[in-house]
Image 1: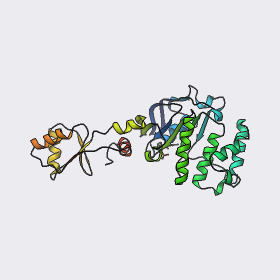
Image 2: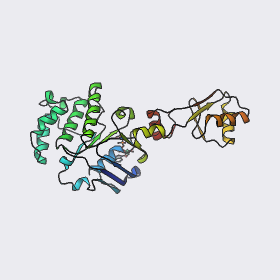
Image 3: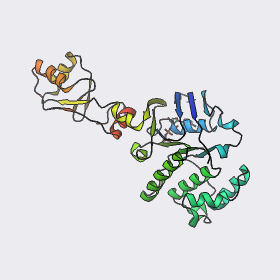
Length: 300
Ligand SMILES: Nc1ncnc2c1ncn2[C@@H]1O[C@H](COP(=O)(O)OP(=O)(O)OP(=O)(O)O)[C@@H](O)[C@H]1O
């Protein structure tokens, strides 16, 4: 059974002209876990993965597999399996032909081709032209390609995108199985809800920078002390909070105070003679915490 290795991203930076796509990004991805690489569209996920796979040259910083950059791996396909979002396959060729060519080029036993087709559920369609494939079938073909060399590391860009509910259920179980076998599994997504059920760890980026990393549960405790308070006279309440030195922001349901207990907020309002219409803790769910992290807290 192939064992996974640690992926190490260190101070990785990529600038396209005036766009800072990725800024001084550092994280590690450990074997035996499924790690979600999350962030909204345009956050820099694909650019990071492309740098990791040697497809884009970093402006600075490094990305390695057990200390070796992708370009210097001895047997890349047998070490790292990758499925990138924009994977393009020749429309006139069948899935089986594609995989045969890749296997031959990488010195991989041709017997792996039917095995991986079977693994991803494409056997019945293996001899059809890829041009007629649905997005979900193309995703499965990308995954079959990633698995071809039986690698210890899998890097998958938005693998759930385009799958039907049955496909989503299948890939969740499959990712877990790969990690349980000791492989390193890095999966990107712009939706936490899409990968929430399969990831152990999360690395969250926004605007090219790291905003959170830790196990999945850490997301829920990182920002749970939030209190929503409101008043029929909201400007008066805002003035009272400000005078009381409490930091807040305006959300749809009132004013959101991040670092104070409800009792303290109630007392501040009482001292200012402001009537309250709401005062409660906002226990954030994982998705809310995620959205707050990537959008600066204006998601309520
Ligand atoms: N080749 C390029 N030239 C110029 N700008 C680019 C290039 N590639 C990416 N960018 C910019 O870098 C930023 C990060 O893009 P990237 O595709 O890495 O984000 P992402 O998180 O993968 O988003 P998505 O999920 O939409 O693919 C964006 O502002 C994007 O417009």
